[in-house]
Length: 328
Image (tube, rainbow, N blue to C red):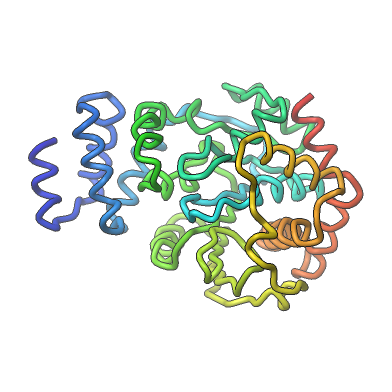
């Protein structure tokens, strides 16, 4: 590892094969904690190259626990995290709204690293038991229209570095990798990213490997459609900018989508929104994200039609029914 670190300290980059090999060795505990922390820290000071991202992605997919589900028509709604905004769990809520609208979801998530409550935290607080195999995930999918893959259970390499990531308390390249390594291999993916630089990197990679993707980045730094500013969208057809008004809503003040100061508060906000007692602003953000995810599948019509479906899913209790079926 010392040779690798010295090589990188002189502003060199890794080839795809080198990046893949190093991450495989990290997963096999070939290096000590200080060496791995130093390696991870290098990428806090510069952006990954496309080759490095591809190599790391391939390594995690090779190491992942295989998942076989009987549906090839799945969607994932996921964010990189690391935007430092501490919003409530918008993408996870949008996942339940999408499931309630009739689109099956394979949600990939983890505990919060640089935020108080990640998707795994909030579902655990609500009583969900993580599944460890395809059979359990399939049952959830059949009963609730959504299954949840807790990343450390399906990615041994992430378990290896989890204490280091938590100790750093900063976004690392593992934040960037998470949305790209869902072992269920969903057909459709909507990914929220915290910077335009990362969005471009994702775009280059996904254009090579995945047709049905949508990247979203709020121009004030959120890794989701926040409605606090305009949103930049990237898909296989190009790029666009959508103002909140274009999505059918008025702009929202950042404090209106704050996620609370504890995991229990985050779970309380999550449940209240699904139960129909969320604020107008909370509902708007969830529906806008869910509608875009539905639109990306090209099965439910234009954005307005998808927004109607998402609104009905949330306000009629269909999304809540999906949560209850998953947890119970």
